[in-house]
Structure formats: structure tokens, C-alpha cells
Amino acid sequence: MKFLTFCLDYEQHPNEYQDYEERKFSEYLKTQKLTSNLQHFILHSIAMVSEADSGTIDGLKATKRFLQCLGRYGNTPFLFPLYGQGEIPQCFCRMCAVFGGIYCLRHSVKCLVVDKESGRCKALIDHFGQRINANYFVVEDSYLSEKTCTNVCYRQISRAVLITDQSVLKTDSDQQISILTVPPVEQGQPAIRVIELCSSTMTCMRNTYLVHFTCSSGKTAKEDLEPVVQKLFSLNAETEGESENGGGLEKPRVLWAVYFNMRDSSGIDRNSYDCLPSNVYVCSGPDCALGNDYAVKQAETLFQEMFPKEEFCPPPPNPEDIVYDGDGTQPEDPGFSSSSNTKTEPSPKES
Image (tube, rainbow, N blue to C red; front, side):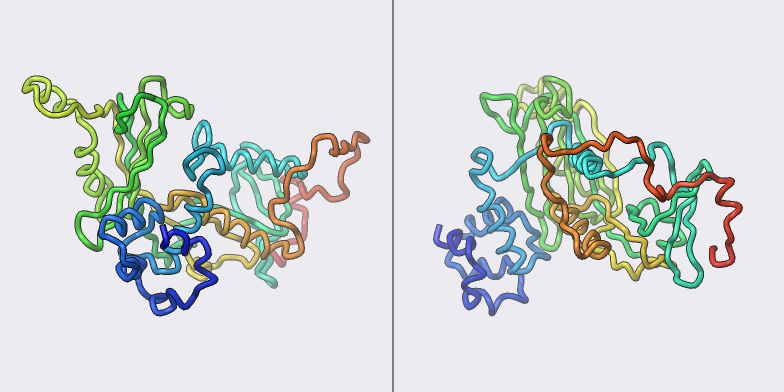
């Protein structure tokens, strides 16, 4: 308890950890007169950071964040959106629309128009040939061409998604969301994070559970994750064998499973991309972290680079305060033009 209290305001006591700032959080925990079980619990269940890679400051910061989130919306520090994580970007899209954002649905980008002199992107051409003028262009990493990403060195993420018939948590309620961190068997290997979702999250059918396994890749996703899957769940063949022998506790049964590797584009240096116009900003895809901290921080950083004097993600206005302009007038320069207009524009400065 004394250590957790210290973590809540660790910034005020730098002398307590300054000798370990450049060392691993796991090494720092060993100096705090904690039992090995408590060290293990803080590392994997509270801070939930990597034993092999996380420094002392990262571990203290993660522990503080966990403690500050307790009791805000129930007994746990966690919230999960109904219908899955895809609802979070949809929420931001709706917020953008409230503040005047315009969406061109089903208009995929064919190419960018770049000014030769300034090296800036000045417009894009969609697959219909329509030109849309732009002061900035924000794109997720996976949409970039292979040529642009030739020199980028990506890490990999191992993932598995299961549909099961029971929860790994044996409780009276069948509507629980469970989070489990499986520590590495060997030093240097990544921990595996397991998230089990029940049907009340609107991500799976009633009487089934959706289970996600995630870790940094060491090998293929199946090689990284299947040993843990087999410890927690029963495959069809295993279940039949157990029922015949009548031995062992019944484990949840895997109804469906998929393993895959995906690239981790978080933390990529902008200079790693080739021939990227100065006003083109690249967002990363999903990472290994439990929450969305990196994505939010990256979004704020990019926003401030483009609009340093504006407020990032202001609160939505009260619906009663919204004024609708119903005169039907068009903005002076909407920034859209048809393909015929694009062809008639002078283009010596474009490529």
C-alpha cells in the first residue's frame, strides 16, 4: 500500500527513483521491499507493462494511471465500448461533423497533386477523377504505397481471435469482461494479453464469448499464441478425449479461431518514409497496448502541428446552443472541382 501511495504522486519525489530512471521498472521494484508475488502483481496486473522493455518512469506512470482510474465508473479502472473499439473512431467522426466536417463517402484516393516548387500536397484526385483541394492530408500508414514505405522497418503484432462457448472466469454471472496478462515463460519474451468479451458488449451472440489474444511477434501468431490458447481452452478433439476419460476440469471450448500477424506502425519516424510531402501527416494503425493512449496522443500532436492556435478536441456544444444557417448559401471556395476543371488548370508546378 505504501508503494502504491507513492506512485500516485511519484513526480513529487524524484529522489526516490532517480538512480533507476535509466533502468527497467522490474529492477526498481526489487528495491522496494516487496515480495516476489507483489512485484509480479504490480508489473503484470496493475502497470501492465513489459518486463523486458519498460523503464522505471514508464512503469510508475502506468501504475499511477491505473490507480487514478479506479472508482470512476464502477470498481475497475476499465471501460469497454459497446459494439467494440470501432465505435470510438465513429464517435470522433460524429464529433467532427458537429463542428462542420464534410465526408466524401466511397471516394477512394487515387493520387496526390504535389507542387514542385514547395513540395507540398495541394490537392488529391479521387477514383472518379474529381479533384479536392487540400491544405493538409492525413493518412493511415497502410494506405501508403510500397514505394513510400520501402525503408520503413516495421515491428509485428501476433493476434488471435476466438469464439468460445464459456468464460474463462468461473462466476455466477455470465456477463463479464475479463482481462488477463499471461507473463512470458522465458525471459525476453513478450507477455500475452487476453481480453474476453461477453454478449452484453454487443460483439458476439448470446451464450458465446469473443476472446482476443495479443502480443509482440516473436514468430508466427500461431506459434506465439497457441500454447496459451491450449492452456486456457479446449479444442474439439481435446474435449471429446476428456469426456471419454472423464478426467480434468472442463475448460471453455473453442468454436472458431483465427491467427494472424499484422504490422505495428506505431512509433515510426516520419523521416523513414520516402518522398513524403511536408504537409502529409501519417497516422499509425493498432498497436499492442491495452488502451488508446498512443492514438490519442498522436492525434493531438498532429493536430497541434497543423493548427497550433486551435483547441484539440473541444467539448461538444450544448444542442440548444447550435445555430443552423438555413440560407442555403455555399462557401466561397468549397475546394471541390470536377475532372474537367482539373484538366484545364495550369500545371507547370504540379507533378
